[in-house]
Amino acid sequence: MYINKGSELKLRTYKYSLSIIKYLDKLPNKRIYWSISDQLMRSATSIGANIVEAQGAASKKEFYNFYRIAFKSAIETKYWLCLIRDGVKNDPASIAKLLSEADELSKMLGASLKTMKKK
Image (tube, rainbow, N blue to C red; front, side, top):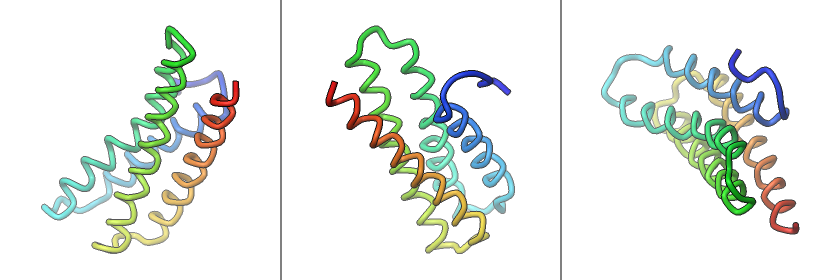
């Protein structure tokens, strides 16, 4: 595993990216899934990537902005998952689990952003 140290959030976002990759790998190779799965892959993996990138930030403002982008990516991820859930109805149990984790991650990121903004 790439991320073996650090915060629970980094580890959770890494595992979440893996879960999304595994889910998308199981989708049928049909045109209806292509754009949605591409967008879902980008937004879901962006959550963790921005948190990791924040570790190399040159300033507090830059650190905050990476977390803000991660938060926005988590919200976008929920959008794409809802489209799959409501539009093509593929594997509702897996979608529910992925949506729940995206929701929890967005809440964690939102709380982190509020804390950072106060400082």
